[in-house]
Length: 348
Ligand code: NAP
Image 1 (cartoon, rainbow, N blue to C red):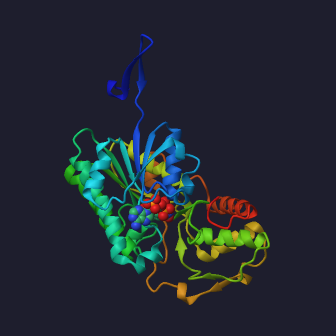
Image 2 (image 1 turned 135 degrees about the vertical axis):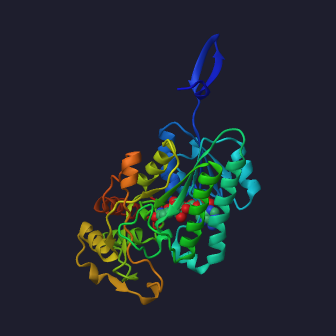
Image 3 (image 1 turned 45 degrees about the vertical axis):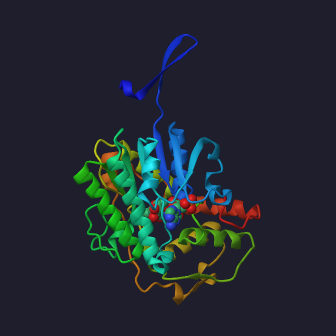
């Protein structure tokens, strides 16, 4: 380890050197990925600083266990000055996770959503580029939505981007900005092309958690009528968020900045998701509890996503650990625990 990694100090007349902790900034720290990444980095002895738009404890429930060990900064990163001021305190690594993640909402407010996604990345990258003190490594939460209805299966880092949603279009723009910062300005910037990933900390509006929560409720005798569903045939590649944040970290430890697909290379229909969920808690025929609601079928939707993570495996040694059935079982277990405590919100 080089001298720069040590901070010298004198105490009781003895000269000692201590390794300097790495400092990481996580934007959107209060979200699903932010909370898992925080725990992962703290376990690696990082100093963690995170941004949030609100310091209301109710919004920070996922950070409850680590709240005392991190620093929170209230900002929305919609101006260059906010990003520059934040970066000024010096970071080794920046994980840019802040932004809306629920795609149906993005169709309702396309301009606002696009602005949030593109502006925050633009300001952070510009502040990193102008930062004079030391190089900062940057990881951007890109998304499989950049592909739209993909032209190849499975999707890789070279699959053409042809997004259809406002969310996907804004993610494509930031994805390309990251590539440009890397190629033109030599910024150590990477895109994590993350496919759907879930956990017990996911908001209940997302498909996997919606069905595990409903099945857990039925198991406990708290039936709430038919569960509305859109298309049963949509196919997605679902992984575990705790696995995916490890890939983000590995990308920033790499020798050179590159983009990586982070996925499981397995896809399931929504119908499979429901069937496995109901079978896991053994509550009878899933079709008795489900009702297709045409209002939930999106006119423009991506039919099939499946990501080939072989580059991440080859270059970073990363592979998902939790299987689809394991993920469902984990989420059901936590939902049952939470509902037993009579806590009906998404906290676990
Ligand atoms: P999440 O749970 O929704 O967390 C995102 C965080 O970003 C929120 O906690 C929120 O923190 C902040 N945020 C939300 N809307 C914002 C806005 N309009 N302006 C500024 N900040 C906002 O999402 P996640 O699952 O952790 O995902 C993290 C990142 O990965 C997101 O950028 C998402 O688009 C991307 N991604 C996720 C998936 C997935 O399946 N989960 C897949 C591909 C890509 P505050 O309210 O505290 O500010």
